[in-house]
Length: 220
Image (tube, rainbow, N blue to C red; front, top):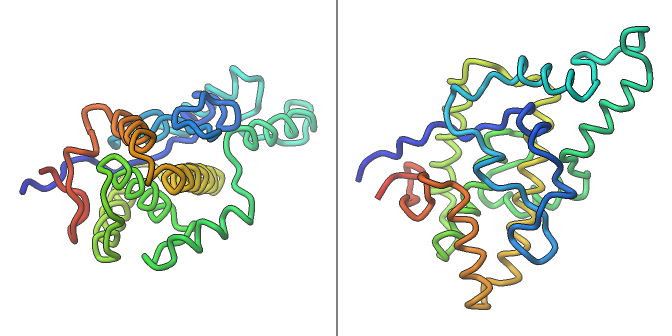
């Protein structure tokens, strides 16, 4: 088998701000869960990681200071607007974070590790796309290693705010997809529709073209 060549799957905070909200996005997966497409939410390749400059441009267009401060240049209402914009994108509650941790604990994952959030969602998406059984903890650790190494190689370090945004978005996407999977996994037609939707999200990086093993995701 050829080693999977997909670079780390990474969130750029500016892209999240630019691509709309989680709460009001179109409902791709059905069942009342609004989930941004995987291809939109996940940036494939290190050349996407220009987040700081892009975020400043997005904030400027939205009338939000790139570094909110309570000064004449950035009054209190701008700070409030900035915080509201962040909440509108994706905010996971403590209860949701705990639910995520409870589900993924057997695999040694936790929400506060960005690589673990990416791992959990990518593995869940792979399971759904291939309509297969949940993987072994060893296989999940393989993906975790891929994500950890990929994040370590990125040229731009995420700020604390971007790290939290990445965590929250991955927690929310994982919980929604996991809930939808539990709802439809015994319903042939509904599961097939969900599987096809998830598989199409990665475009040419279709999850069905990869297998999951101890070394992580690898091309067939």
